[in-house]
Length: 383
Image 1: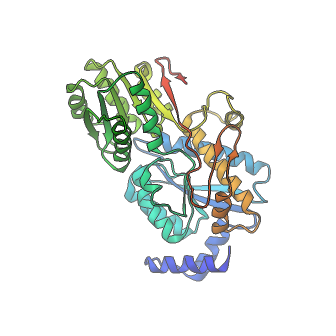
Image 2: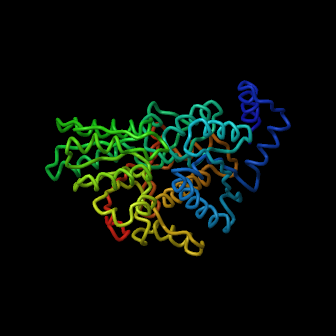
Image 3: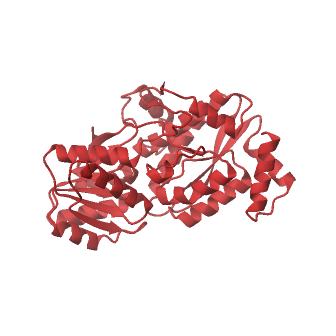
């Protein structure tokens, strides 16, 4: 890495109160970006109520990097991920991020969730580390524009607009919203409200759940008392599945609509036969059959991995790794963080085998792809 980047890192560490010598920083840099490898840092929930999201994304990314590294990597460098568990809690995520900055990883990669990413992004920005492909569609991470934040997936506003279009196209107007009481849930609620307002409508009733909780009984009662015709859910899979079961027992016969962060496979696993009538918006290609060349590549990469089944979260990790690697390839052998960002900005109208991405100097969201899927009682996903 360039000397000025090393000096910048030292200043950041000292300014934040960290005890770091020039030698320590130099060693960390040589470990994280050398002639033979690149090391990324991922803070994600690998335990707790959202662990499947972190684990599936990580496995998908690792599958891509493993296949790439077996062929010699990118420009002679292999790519590795150093992971730390944050349990989907912002404070733990911030601590992990400070550790990654002290270790001088090349970039922060595949963070899971809105509240955690919001805690990490200011730290990444201050340290001038690329914050690449967070598993969240929150607008607060996209606006105002941030040079160091690079998003591969569509936003929650894109997803909720598609959901509202689908619901209202059937003539339904009474729509309840069940959302997680944090930045993630409120972003989704904002998206639903905006989409409904454009149709001179508004949510009929609201109910909330706290992050990492399944205490939804009060929300079920509040929402069911108003007799909505459909319910949009902005939550994680355990709380959402608990809500669905209790609402069905209360006599609700309408459909439930979820944004992609819920974790489609995890939700199916939780609901079993009760998955009927539950829809999920998707921002990645269909991962279960080789419907696109990219899907076929993903399936081939996980084929020989014992106990690993295809899923949307894994596909998102795989796609994130592929886009990251393409940015590294375009940056060339003289790789720097700023050069990598410039290279990603040059990825305009690039088709990754059925999944187009389009970045630019002032455009750091690569995709607006959204499609709705319907879960079935026999554990399948219907497009």
